[in-house]
Image (tube, rainbow, N blue to C red):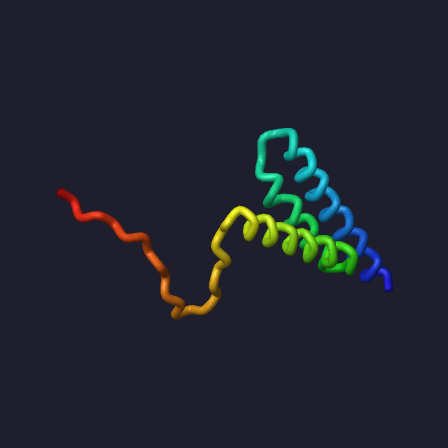
Length: 90
C-alpha cells in the first residue's frame, strides 16, 4: 500500500515538473512541443486523465498537420515512397 502511494507521488511530482518546464519553454527558448507531451506521458503512467489529454493532443496535432497538407506517415515497412522527379545535371 505504501509503495503504491509513494509511486503515485513520485510520478505526479516528476510528470508535473516536466509539464511545468515545458510550459515555461513556451516563452523561454526550448522544445516545449516535445517536453509537454513527454510530461503528460509520464503522468499517463499512473493517471488516466493525462492519457486522455495526451491522446486529445495527438488528435489535434494530426488535424493540424492534415489541414496544412502534411503527408500522413505510412507505417508499413515495404511502403513505396514517392520521390519528386529530379532534373538531370547539365
